[in-house]
Image (cartoon, rainbow, N blue to C red; front, side, top):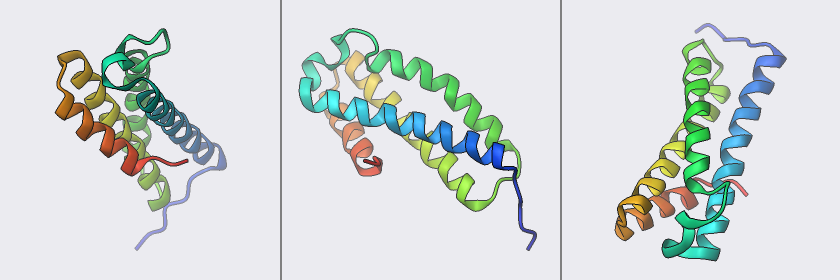
Length: 116
């Protein structure tokens, strides 16, 4: 099996992307606990909907980084970040649709994967 080696700069970029995603998810979790289903989507910027728009761009960056051979640890970080973006997208969609059950499910997925 061939070991994949990446530069320190690339490793730093992957860690920075991961940190942005998980910082955003932690903020969403804090806001969800403070404001709940009824008010979370109505918060001033940056709210869940603003974060999801930004995270879609970051998701494209994750896809680009993942397309190159990465060591397992960096693959894991990228996949975890992508999964957390999907959880936040689900949460935002559920809020817009007024679907409390889907909101609770997405919130539970965010909490399960969060890093504090």
